[in-house]
Length: 92
Image 1 (cartoon, rainbow, N blue to C red):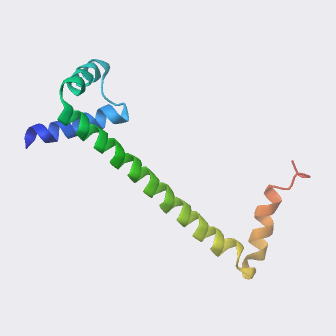
Image 2 (image 1 turned 90 degrees about the vertical axis):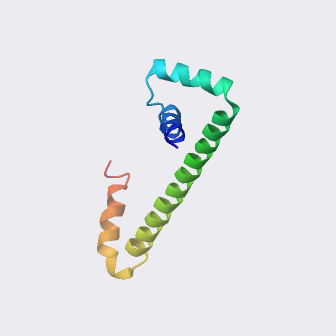
């Protein structure tokens, strides 16, 4: 159990690029000689990729919701005008 936890932490550091160079070289050698570890690291990379995609979607949905609240409501016309004035090329 402890070894797999250590491998998980090492894989995280390796994937995120926070592992010191000397440790990264040793870890790379372990990846070359240990197919199980290599498979686990590849799966961990995929999980991180999926988490990044999920986070982007979450942020995008929140921004779209905010946009809908601020720019689709006619009672916020003054605010909308103020924002649009920042992007007026005549003022730049």
